Image 1 (cartoon, rainbow, N blue to C red):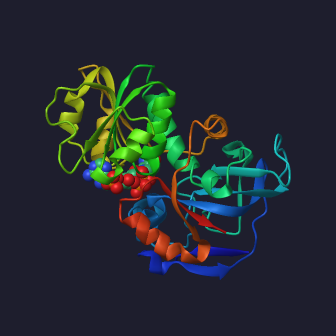
Image 2 (image 1 turned 45 degrees about the vertical axis):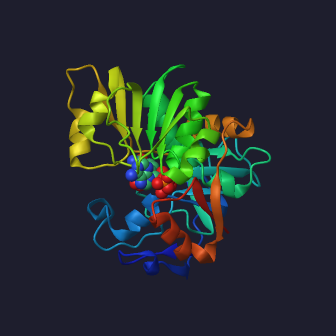
Length: 314
Ligand SMILES: NC(=O)c1ccc[n+]([C@@H]2O[C@H](COP(=O)([O-])OP(=O)(O)OC[C@H]3O[C@@H](n4cnc5c(N)ncnc54)[C@H](OP(=O)(O)O)[C@@H]3O)[C@@H](O)[C@H]2O)c1
């Protein structure tokens, strides 16, 4: 099979396409022939060596977490999936053998069937971003109908799903984006929008939120905590020693802080698939690139201003 690989840390130019043996599924695993790949910033961040303390100093890795494709081999002990079935899912973030490959082997419990009528490229961009949003809003944030939610970075991959999922949960969403993406956010259900280039989302301190989801990582911690109601939660997705300490240390003011690190989760992916099947959740793919255009696609992702998601078609 073919796969993309890097053996040095660096930009998109370190990726090389190589031929290798196809993997075989182990117990509880299936093998999927990949049809589409969802691009996430973590793909090029890991390749750049941002987390080399975790990924090692001499990489031999295939990038990618998100994929959609067709099951072509079933390992022992797998129930509920069949050969030829269209499925989508994400691989664990730090796995060395990622999804930029002709085949991936993965635990069946991490997958969900692709809903009827959803293109492979739409399915492929959902798992990592939508699971991040789902876990932040519902698993940790536990938002209730009527909750006031601020989403900072609402027009990007995670933000587009967070916005739609919060609306599904009947929250009232204030979306922060560039001026160009204000109407995009309103079209996905935001009640208020803030253009970050002309206003600090938390500057006047008059609005209070039950949950602030700082996806862009640009909010002042102090102002964001002050912008929460009692029992409110601030969620970040940017790992680091300070974020880790803040998430562990108990607070005395009843407010909560959570560092979200997404993991594969087939059960919640099934819920996401149900919302997609019902038309409540859409993928918003800015552009689909051919797999051979991976370098161009990564450079677009690295701009930090993708509207929705980018996909690679295999
Ligand atoms: N910890 C985890 O498990 C986890 C999971 C997923 C993602 N992440 C991280 O979360 C970040 C976002 O991921 P993503 O997939 O959503 O990225 P993305 O698709 O590249 O989206 C980035 C968005 O940020 C917005 N943005 C840029 N500058 C901003 C600012 N100053 N204020 C508010 N919004 C701004 C952009 O909107 P405009 O074009 O409107 O500026 C863009 O739509 C990345 O750093 C990623 O690595 C972490």
